[in-house]
Length: 282
Image (spheres, helix red, strand yellow):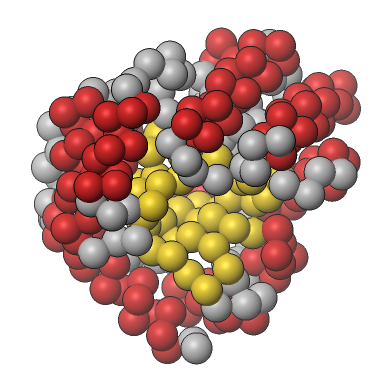
């Protein structure tokens, strides 16, 4: 396995971040010993790329960008708006000298039609993904798409949902991005989806069942690391857990219970957990 360990910006600050908060997250990620930070791009795309780039270099951190489509860019309803926004995200990724864009890129989080995904909606998604993949390929950027649970989307809930749509595009720079929190709800286990994905899996959000310390919930980590070893995983394991110690986090991610660990404890403990489990399967 060739693994890089990362932390999401959301492990330190809320999704609605500003330059000061972004700098704080970058510095905390580096100090904790991670290889990279995943920066959630704001839908407005308004942030100082040059400043963030300098902060990353100063802290010797690699970066992966992510985007969660807002309701105004739900592909099935607004394909043109979604394509424009995703291409803007590709541009920002390129400007940060990154080569990987991830996130919920199949539909707006919290948007529902009231029915399962239709064939017509699937065709729109395939077309948008194809156009964006071609645009990203010119800049040397890979795109990984994250399925989320049924309470957040009706479009892609499982690894197979994403892989089937990627297959229809025929694009080699489209990949799967898994999240163990969502897998714990939607998948039958943690082994089969990873084996099925194989080398199409490049990015994983490492998140406990309750968004807390890795190893203290119900995620089957042994099953997950066993499967990663079997596919000789080459990609990123990125911590995305939340602590109520971060001001505003409870309200923004529905974290209504008080966390037993603060953000720094979660980061340090979870990084150690990931490294220990990775080594045990080498």
